[in-house]
Image (cartoon, rainbow over all chains, first blue to last red; front, side):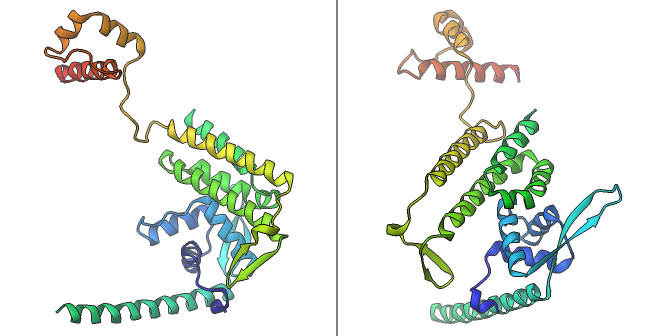
Length: 113
Length: 164
């Protein structure tokens, strides 16, 4: 499914990773991304909602209204089965890239030695 | 005051989003902005400005001839004619980005050139050579157009060092 669309962008990957833990609202996703990347990748609201909009349109992410204790409602986003599949495919692709890179680096190290 | 101005500027920036996007996500984006630390404002403004630009370009290219190359679409320039409304939107967006940049540049927590004393102080200092010699013995004679600023800066620095 993901192969047809090409690789995920970094922002989309981090958003799907954040939602794989639990359902989150926008600010929660931003904090989760910051935590997952150990502060190396910060996502702004513009990028976040542009990606969420695209992911919602493709059905990778779902949304629901949650009532808070004070009576307010808050929109929360969740990972759909299709989004989970895309995330798994992307992680498999990245694993293949890392394996190929390790193999290549090993050969380079042998050459140097 | 700073926060209120930032939030107001951000609200104006959000007005440049396409209306359906703004209605759907605008309130949440404002919530995020309100919860942001002052150090995050640069990221938020820059990121949102770029996202608006991207969303506007996407709208512009959606109903035009597009040459597709895999997942990336390129606009065929010869066939792209921007309507007047889009041009006006682009100008407004550009002005908003420039204002945001000026605003960000004026933020106190960003690095800037060291602040110099105001002109009144410079003139007094310049005119009173005895004061200058008393404060900083051996200060070189005025040379170049920036000398007043440098002298004043040296004066402030010397005074603060003495105070320490």
